[in-house]
Length: 442
Image 1 (cartoon, rainbow, N blue to C red):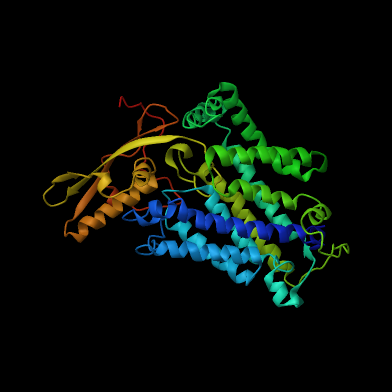
Image 2 (cartoon, helix red, strand yellow):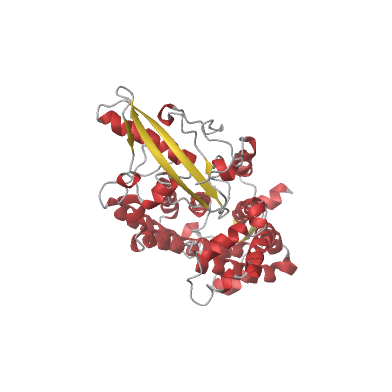
């Protein structure tokens, strides 16, 4: 049964078509970051970036070199689309995209993380076996079939993404539309739909429609009688997200995944009519079967386990952010805060209040005022800055935050020197105060 599920040969029209769309989207994402000013705002203008903890060595290239970096990355996206030096191009795009992901988190997005995983998948895919420059240069690699696992791993990955996205929405501020209302207020200026998005019935439609869509879309696409309706629902859902939230290539990438749910003959007829259609239905067991199953079993166990880790960490993840990243917790809360960083000279005991505008961009100030890991990182940076001046200092942070418009509460213990605190990725940080406390009058 498992052998047939993974290694049965099917027509590869869906994978070939997906490769072309995927490569094009990778190219557009790369060059789009240049022309929208994202690179300048995020990687060039800031004095430093909030890299992922443990990746402090991974910093943007100097000057305007990041433009060249993204241009090269876009070229690799085009090579993926064209199927030229395919595996090398997919590998290089994955490495370069992962590099930019880990070097900054002020503009964190779950979709950026997903693109790393999908790019890594594409390295392994035999996606250049037809309608590619590689197969034109070397006809010996040309093939019209692929093992079923090529589509199955995409389906399973997206099932994990959507399912956890649905489960994460099952909390009070989503269910009573508190968060949706806040989110839509920021869209009131939109032409035509701005006022409509303020209607309460629209908030309930989006809140419960989002839960149902994320939770049911993969099963409905897998079930032939509901596939057509799920397809139309996907078009509405993803185009709505693209227009209202401007979330880059993700809506179109998600629509491209639908290729793997339809019968190969339908995809072949629509996109690759001139390609011979595979009809043999062989089951070819590769020599690397056991290694393959072991590696992918471990991978998907990790993917299932990662989003659960916040349940084993003290307090609410919406408050602490511990276990939030890599967990498909997408657009779930509105968080505002303000923080005062006080640097105290350990010899003279002279305090200095830090002006965050002297060190950080507006977006960085936001995460340095709301997210414990960024607050800890900036405290470490201040310690190092003053050490370079020959001063031994302590760093104290007075930070209050509001989640989904609720009253402000103290997030960080203002009496603890954060510059001396270690970071433990697997434990709750004791200097993050409990979420259940008296509210602030501020």
